[in-house]
Image (cartoon, rainbow, N blue to C red):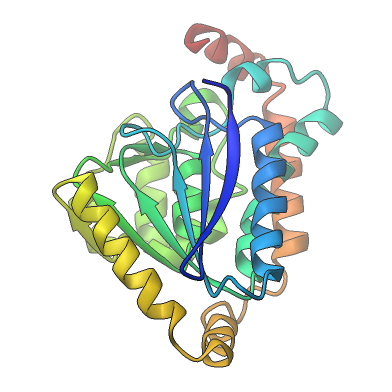
Length: 249
């Protein structure tokens, strides 16, 4: 199947789904589509609540596209690529609609950042998480503010340092990344649907104001995440990172 990003409006709930055949990794083209689609859903008055999900029934998101990262030749290209993640997170942050995350499976790196940037996240017991960036020579710099905001600086640091370990759904739920966890995808989808449609029936002005309250104190993220993208864009050019990524290609 070809990569895609779709938006489906059903019962005033905007379901944004992204997919890539390589375990739902995210190249720059998907990042740009995600950013634009989130903004479009936020501007659509018929959409009251947004659900962010990925295609398939296994990995939620494998993070950055290794093949695209390997091809980066200079710091300008590097910053541009990692700015894609910054732009998606900022689009989610500034979107006036509440965003529910639907995480059906494992998620790595930038995928953890996406889950953390949702306003309320539900998952299955297959949804373990990993921040693998340090092991390949960079770091979770762009997504760190979103991850730390959701699970705390200590848990984020633990995951970053233990970069080759998948942390369990119990860890993710205990630290606050997941609000609830389900045995099956079917149970997850039913819960997501019920919650989203319930929220869509609430006072939309109250939802907008609640979103503002939840994200208060993040007004500097446009500049902050751009600066973090610059750091990642520089480190990705290191010999260590290039050699490491070639082994995973």
